[in-house]
Image (cartoon, rainbow, N blue to C red; front, side):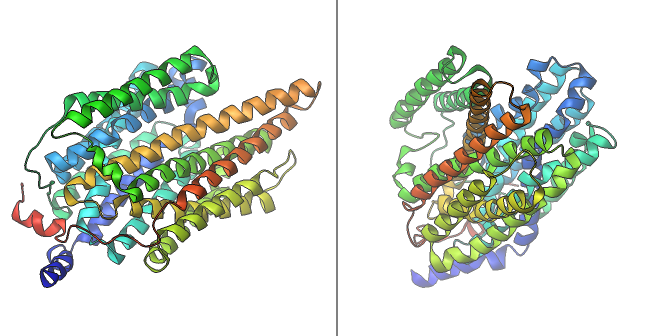
Length: 496
């Protein structure tokens, strides 16, 4: 058994010599998905003026994408296991690319919002499938950790480069080009996928699409993200927030009962018996709240208080991307030597420290020292924590459930992202209003700054919660239970 297991572990190097090129392709797709989640922020004023959006409807350019992306991730990940990972990935690329083209050609607010819905659906299919392909292409251990470190670095770069790319495009050829740039990338991915990616699927004795489970969990996630998106504007106690939250809870309860009785469930509940996976996904939610909430607040502070242009803010935020890249690369090597727990704890501690540094911003602040060091510390922490949570969420997962595990991890990140914006916005607005009420005639910029300081403090508190969860992770990665890597089995059941 030991010799066959060893042979299995060595198989990817022999059977899949293109695996690093495949990783580059998959990371490029991940980069594209992440950029489109936030690049529209800098373009919203131009989009609104060009298409005649009502002020209250403009947020849906962002929210439509977030809703379908967050809501369909689990279904997308499970479909990859059942239908074939390369096939599902390419289907996601087709949806995303076609929707990007329609976004760029949009002739009305309704056309753009519908195209963003489809674009989010494509992203929900691409992202967990790409991560599942990486997990089944690279042997669990140092090589997979290295691949996931690169994936994590790309995540950090993609999430923070949107402003750097979006500003010049909006100021130059126009807002439509923030969508048009996806088209050549998507077409290249479609051409290269059959060349670089092996077709594979989970070795399941029974295939079930569990429509009741799919509908209830998708509905629950969509309602949860919708409530988080609407809460800052309507208030957490408003009926328009409470009703979707209650609906989400009801659907989640129904989903749990359906899965417990379903012979071939969409999400086997036993997967949550893994403390490593459960802790990693819970931690990912909190990583997402800080990793998205902090930059969101910072861009508002930089542009509304300090008067930065979108381009200037994009350039100044490069340190966050560089820090995240360095953290992810360092983290993938440190996991094998130190284990999950200390690396994740270090990352979340750095995220908390960076957020605390940013609480010192002022009306007359400057880039140095507060913004620079806050971004640097947060970037390093995001890289360390994100790659550790990703590796932990996939550690020891059976080959036929890697798509599901990837979907769970990405769903946790998207929920955290939506909550991060909702929580920080709510805290900032509440504190700003309280400050104005207590200080009649106060400067609006001073009031805004007070709100942003409180929002950064909330990010520090969220990072502290994540730090507590990090101690639930095991010290060392668990031994893999599935000895034969996917590339070897894929060669036997290729479904070209």
